[in-house]
Amino acid sequence: MAASTKTAGALKAGRGKYQFRMARVRKVPAGTGYSTSYGGVIEGARMLVGLINKPRGTGSRMHSHRNEQFNYVVKGTLKGSVNGKRIVAPAGTLIYIPANAPHTLVSTAKEDVVFLALKDLSQGIIGKAVDGTMSGPHYDPGFGPHRNGSAARRATKK
Image (cartoon, rainbow, N blue to C red; front, side, top):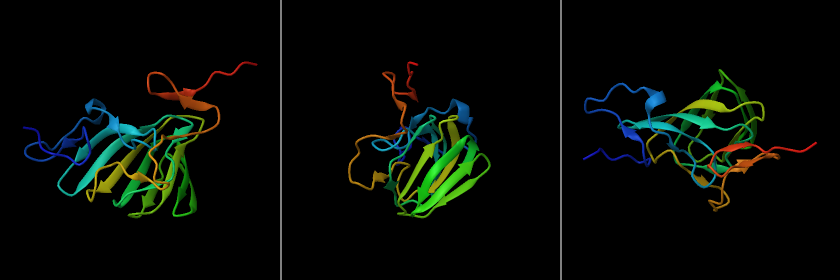
């Protein structure tokens, strides 16, 4: 029987499992109902880590969670706000999100974002939209969902 995790589809660290090839870890939704984020998630006894992807021009609507969180941007640029303060975070930037802080982070139109998310395990990786709905992610103008579930720039005629 597999060890229980707070994030559906996450792997459980410990009990002889101490090393993970993140490129091989199954990708799971990391913001169901309010974000396009997805990636591999590993949970330990007290914290989780996720190597998370956000397609360009997409991201999260305003949401919060009980977890304190750090996001380290590996590739691309995230824009948005944390507790009402504007954020523009290119690769190499660490973002701190206090527990219960309303926040939104969106990948810029230039390229997809990859970031390392680190959270305590007061809950899993998925939070709740501030408006109380789980009606879908944020899409910048000209970006939107495709049939296969991915998000990409819509073709425009000139």
